[in-house]
Amino acid sequence: MTDEELVIEFALARLDHPDLDLGEIAALVVRRMGIDHMLEFAARNLATRGELRGAAFPCAVEHVLRVMLLLRGPSD
Image (cartoon, rainbow, N blue to C red; front, side, top):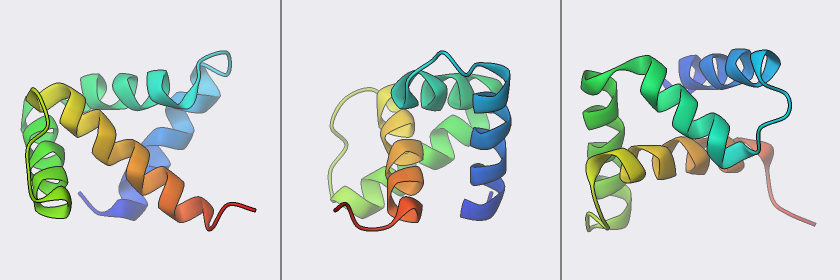
């Protein structure tokens, strides 16, 4: 899955659940995507960080959040 596809999934989940915070939406996206994508995201997180900091699910959520925050641009 490309980062662009991930952004679309995240945006759709946010439209469905506007009351959730970013972390909760990222977790929802990972759950919706299924185990194969969860493992893919966790592997990408491992490649980025150089270590697996916990179980696969939280690492996958961390990857989704990282992609979303990087695409937002630098913080002011």
